[in-house]
Image (tube, rainbow over all chains, first blue to last red; front, side, top):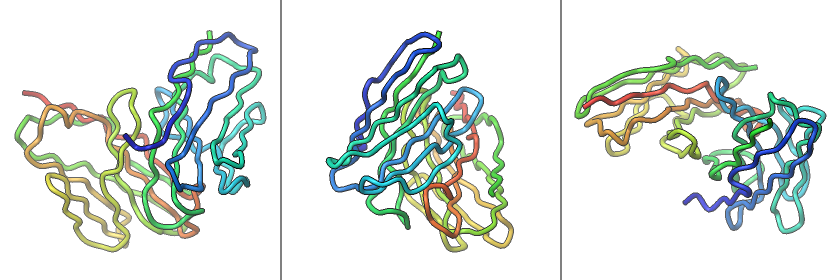
Length: 114
Length: 112
């Protein structure tokens, strides 16, 4: 158990819909990262938050947005869903903003868009 | 930007040794990670190298050569539970999450 909690574990929805994925980082970790993993792709970095502020942005689509709340949990919002958005979405946390030390990953949210 | 290459799939026998290679090209370098990921599960941390040489941790060892842009993960006394994907990830000099790039992973199959 990494200490990172993600909900929901599984989500099935239709094209055009909007979903919200939630992540609670490990106790004491201030950084939250979101990754997307499709079947034929590696882990693709989407976005990072540190202590409530956006710190880095990767290949995140404009249809996607995220935020980190004062209690440090984070939400990833995916809208106008397309079939290609079907993937595993992982949240990871880290103690600091950046620097040495590994990322701790949650169990992921599997999104299926029909 | 960064480019990470590792074999797509490898097969090995229970009890044997296997070496998974990773080559990378990066504009800067601030550490290399190996993660293990079982199908449909979260990646879990295995090792971290920032200096050249070998880091040993039980049955798992990781080697780094910064001048060659090369790393390998060595798994000894293979067990069936080692069947998983092994992800190589490189952090660039900035150290931020946008500098942590993952390879596509090597799917390791352990046969009896």
